Length: 471
Length: 103
Image (cartoon, rainbow over all chains, first blue to last red):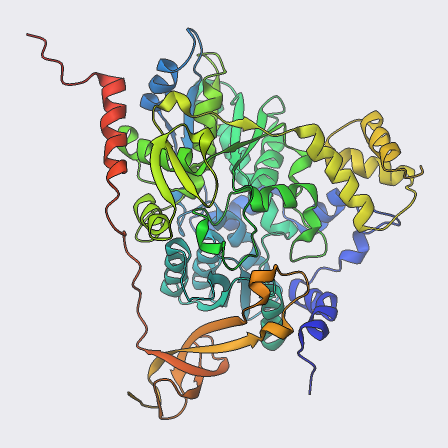
């Protein structure tokens, strides 16, 4: 009988993964710390046209863009004269499963079917689960979603419980677990047992699926206002949303567009802590995923993640839980759009950044998500209150994640906070060096680190010197 | 409660005991087991709270204690949060002016 202990299964991970994704990642590896990212995206991904066709077959993509005129007017009332960019939003909630994740899932499930897999498995507590389940339903494959749902008292975030319902509505099997990184262990066991495809969020085809979003953004805005957006804001967690969108913008030739990542500030809360699990009111789009994945993308469930946000990110900001909840309510009350809340992380950031920009500039929030029972600001705030979190009006900057949620007393108090990009880029280099256990790097490695950080050689060399790594 | 073969139930099973948990988990998480819930058709007559094998919707077999018969959803829109009401009122006041009597 097979040894299914934690250690034994984890030691089989590479072998299990190879069978479950159909990619031999070794072919992209080079000596040292680097690998050929573009080769991986090229050989295992799809062309933009192919993806548009794959997604089009299941009604994914080509979502509308709305101009948020009242929110723009509100931003201008809170700005210096002449400031306050026009705010637009791409209504990705209009995709079949209710979020932009349908783009990733469409590609992944299509690919699984093409390779002859009978089913797909994804480990996700987020919108991606519903997206994979929906695509599996359309393309006739079986589907299992593995979720981290409950704390040790059996209490689940209403948002995650709703996502389980949605997956089941599409005919998927949902395996629900308590808190802990060993979800990955159970995930591997399921892959091994079923022989299904790992519809990971981080495969080349999944990430490439988001390129159509970035491409559409550029094309739609050129048609509508005659130019590319000045700024695109992406909610950032695992980095795939930002990576795919930025790659799509580049493919459209929108190289001057500034790409901003935005995450909800959950600093101080440990993501694998049983007792803190229900103290957070966001299950995704927060710094608990955003920063670790930005600084070390290969921590994901595939050997090499195709989501590498620091290659493309120009600026990274955080917003507070209270600010996002407030903007979600504002979107409904003055724009007539009931969406989110998690997708509105970038909306809260965009509202703040719009006030720095000139009136004739354009800022786009590149996604919305569906809302409903459980997954709506009211149940989430109500759940927080039941879990001892204080909810009040005040200055969001006084928030303590896990202790209180502060709704801004006035919209002018919504203020995105810039993270230190240099520090994050240094961490990218540091993690790449330390996790590969190297004492010296090659010329190719230096080029790889330049690509990974989006910086020049002088920057990479200075960090390597600090780390006492030879080159 | 009697469960008949073929009934749709939710089962519960311990995946890893607290001793078997991964070394990197935080202390509070290490104190508790990793638990799993899954739904399926009971493969034999049984009782609520007893162990049974189920066939899940994808056709897998799983064994665990029955915790719910005809498991349903109980998530909702939660309790009313009055602060939310205030946001719309404030924003409309800032944008479009309040109820000022202009006579």
